[in-house]
Amino acid sequence: MENHERFRREVATWLADNLTGEFAGVRGLGGPGREHEAFDERLAWERHLAAAGWTCLGWPTEFGGRGLSVAEQVIFHEEYAASGAPARVSHLGEQLLGPTLIAFGTPEQQRRFLPAIRAVEQLWCQGYSEPGAGSDLAAVSTTARLDDAAHGDGNGSSPANGGAAGGGWIVDGQKIWTSLAHVADWCFVLARTEPGSRRHHGLSYLLVPMDQPGVTVRPITQLTGTSEFNEVFFDGARTEAGMVVGEPGDGWRVAMGTLGFERGVSTLGQQIGFRRELDGIVAQARATGTIDDPVLRDDLVRARMELRVLRAHALRTLEREPGPDVAVGKLLWAGWHRRLGELAIRARGARGLVTGGDLDEWQRLLLFSRADTIYGGSDEIQRNIIAERVLGLPKEPRSTEERR
Ligand SMILES: Cc1cc2nc3c(=O)[nH]c(=O)nc-3n(C[C@H](O)[C@H](O)[C@H](O)COP(=O)(O)OP(=O)(O)OC[C@H]3O[C@@H](n4cnc5c(N)ncnc54)[C@H](O)[C@@H]3O)c2cc1C
Image (cartoon, rainbow, N blue to C red; front, top):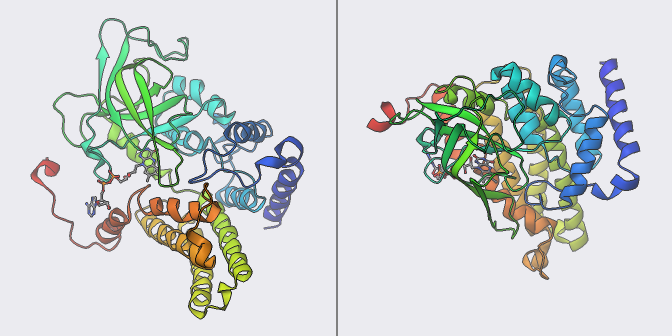
């Protein structure tokens, strides 16, 4: 415990000392609905974090991480959020692909990609969802086939475009809602590599470079007017033969492994961010006088109490091996945050919905928090998981196609 307090002070001191000078301006920037804010400056900040050894804290030391305990990682994320440090730009590499490569990758893949992720020299995006495959991910129809003419060797000697000159895998299809694809160097793609295969059979998990003629990224404009996710088109895109994680055809298992890493220790830091938002809303309510509305007061108090429940639940979940009950946490925080967006507007009274052009922070919160109950598995899907895998209720009827 004393060690934890010492570590907490070390993190807080480092952040306070370093969020100054050239990095003073990045405080509070970025995050859901605001990823466009000061991207280059946040990238520079994150490389500064990496140089000081504050990235990939939970990765084992033999893979370049610091091998910190869950408790220490939670402390880091809490202090990071409390300091007002900006939203991270490399979380998809650090939290999703990195742990996936550590668990399923070849030594060559680990040597090639992990140092670049740790140093924030390479950004990644997640190519799972398609127009016909979201909640039902096993319906993926993007294909990849090996070009028998000349296989890439995957040993890292090829140029950054992953052997686009010939050989290796050829990828065709469309992904959608691909967060940060417009700034990513690489994408981890779930693709069908066995022609005629169905559902979760015959899929492979491929690493595909984004900077090549066969990849087109088209931004999707959100309600907030910003574009942080995209459509990604693969049209004869190429990657080396060695860029398959796990065995060809075993992509479902690897893809599910990645999702298992998705709900991790950063949840506690996320809640510190929620607390700051709630404090800001209370301040708004005081400033506008809406704090005198007894219904709003009641809802603000309820929000604060629910946030404490969220924290208790998250801490309890982290003590156990990840299992289906993480769905409870996702369901709770997503609904809570969505309601917070509504509270933000109510707290501001009549001017809450008026814009003078650009949306302000609270209007963005209202609009972007609509997405909270969709990404990372929608509320309905979480409820299905809880019903079937936590409570053991009868499974929902599957179609004939799905049963195959
Ligand atoms: C902000 C944001 C960022 C995202 N980033 C990424 C990313 O980086 N990479 C990526 O691959 N994807 C990403 N996604 C996509 C996300 O994973 C999907 O939106 C999500 O899985 C839902 O899929 P869908 O949009 O196709 O909706 P659908 O699956 O078509 O669902 C439509 C509606 O039907 C409901 N529904 C579906 N199936 C069932 C069922 N069996 N029982 C009950 N109800 C059901 C859903 O809950 C939903 O309300 C992102 C999404 C958002 C909103």
